[in-house]
Length: 111
Image (tube, rainbow, N blue to C red; front, side, top):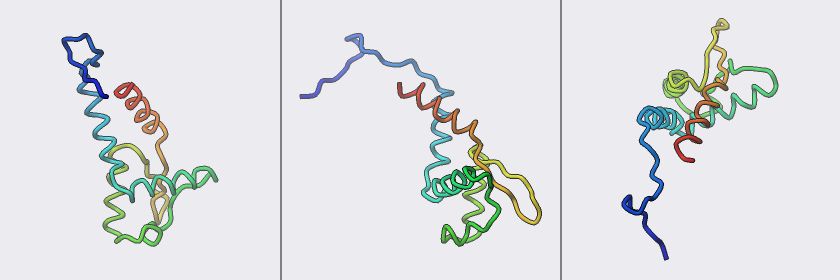
């Protein structure tokens, strides 16, 4: 049997926090494609060995260059990754501060 909670019964309904909810939605949207999760997974593995990604992701992901570039742009715009120019390529790394921020917002919104 399930029960429903009605505000008149003094249920604990969290206060609305539009900024955190908006931030969480934006960050979650940036992670909403399997290719972007794969990119973060690759970057995390490279980070453990002290490296950064400066190789061709097109082969690894099996996607067109323009598609990979768009996924990288989304991850960079959202703050999940950083890019440093090391000619002739870019060196991508995970931004751990954004990961921590994302985790903190999830904790605040869902707990």
